[in-house]
Amino acid sequence: MKRICFLIYVLVHSTIVSAVTLRQQIENDVASDKISQVQGYYYRLLSVYHPDMMPEQYKTLIPQVSRHTTALKALVKQQWSSFTSDEQKLLSEFYTRPSENLPLSVVSPTGLFRVHYTDKGTNAAKEEYVRFVAVIFDEVYDFEINTLGYLPPPSDFNVDGPEYDIYIQNWGDYGASTYDMPANDPARPYGYSSFVEMDNDFTHTPTKGYDAVRVTAAHEFFHMIQIGYRSYHVSDIGSVFMFEASATWMEDVVYDYVNDYYNYLENFIRNYSDPYGDHPIHKTDYSSEYGFSLFLFMLEKKYGRRAIRNFWTAFAHLDVFPALESTLNEFGSNMATELAEFSLWNFFTGSRADTSVYYPEGQNYPMVEAKETQEFNNSVVLTGRQTLLSSKFYKLVPQVSGDYAVSPVFGAPFDWAFIMIVTDGDSIGRSVVSKGNISHNLSDIRSLSEIWIAPTFVRMPESDFDLTRSDFQFTVQLGKAPRLESRIVDAVPNPFLPSSCRNLALRFQLAQHQSDVYITIVNELGVKIARYYLGHLPDGMNQFKWDGRNEQGDQVVSGIYMFYIEAGGMIGTGKFALIR
Image: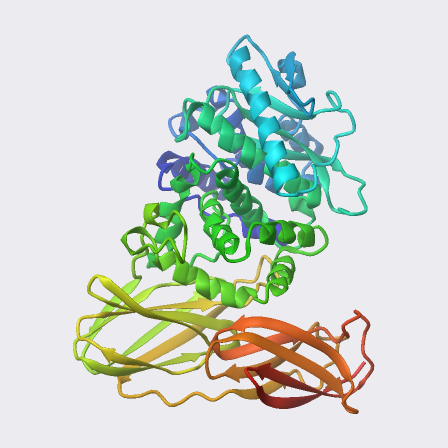
């Protein structure tokens, strides 16, 4: 039930204004008991499958195009056991393969796909179009499986033939993938088979015609791959945002020239300046999760495409945030660092784009705006509050030239990271990525230049209900910031009881950014228990979470342990007790 509550958000999409009205009206009718929750789901799905059958009060609100069917069907399926038999019967038509209404089919040249269609009625598709769909799915399969190295989707056990099934209909979405039966694959214990439904002509979508076929095939076939690794409904924490973000990213990987994902970026970038609310990176509102594909573009440029494949390999066995953390650890990074740098990358778009360093297509993206702008003379105090995994941009404009000390104060310093960017007219100067309550000196700041600050609350959520908020404060004033020193801070909790606490946080401070950081844990005799490469870390407060196991994955015994940090040399040692 926790997953379900997290997925229910207000639908916002800058290019689909009428969809907002439709969904809001349905939700208002549910809230006022005019219709039941199940009827609300039914009408939302009906608007995609059979818009002509919608009640009169909704017909004028039916969106021109929607892209939410995969996630919505997963949401409904998660609640299936709580529905009555009559409610299940009402919704079941959306989960039944439409084979009876699509009597014709074409098998793709490779024999991998069977494309089902009809040449009569509202769902009619031209044979030329159908054959093109078949060829494109073959093309997508070859790239995503043979070139990128993903595991093929599981077999659907010969339902409608031995091939992967694609059903072409006239409906109000690009396409959707529906999980079907357990894969029974030990390598992917939570994987499922699936099938794809897609539009019959793509005349109503922002991207039209054969280009829409291309990106839809790349997107939906990647959903089939994803569901084969791990289906939505077996995750303890909502994972829709990664399903949709990486499928949207895949569209551009396979068909770089189409750029349908541009349609989602205006809303995503605008979230940084929203004065009324926070927008965490894992938000699911049938728009933001597509815009979050930018995070995958960042990881691709930094670590290569295998980073995203490694995530799906890890996600087969781990929930979404542990899988992300595990994947980034392989590349000497972590989620906290990447989320802070994500804000930095999202600043460098539009006329500020630097495509050699940041997004390769960043010049075509919208630009972030500040949630708040303040002019000040000698000092200013900036305060705010944010939810987990959210960022905001603030712009400060000094009226006096000189050196400025920037001193942050966070309620939970190890759970915060921030960036600072200094611009002077049309030029962009230095940028800083840091963590925790660490002061920084910005020297030689000219009057009327801009100091952009973007704090990010980087704590991972414990559940879909985890809407923790935390306060921050930045004081910016003329003068020099105190010099920062590298040191061990503490180990929390101490003593560490693995039976009651999942991880031990080993906390330390870095005086400057370090590209090669190591942490070593030894027992009281000085025998090495484990050594970890932490990769590149920003200056300021950092921490490593240890699960009480050695390098072989075995639980260590009760005792006194030491840890030390190496970052361009030894920076200190710490001590803690472990009690089993």
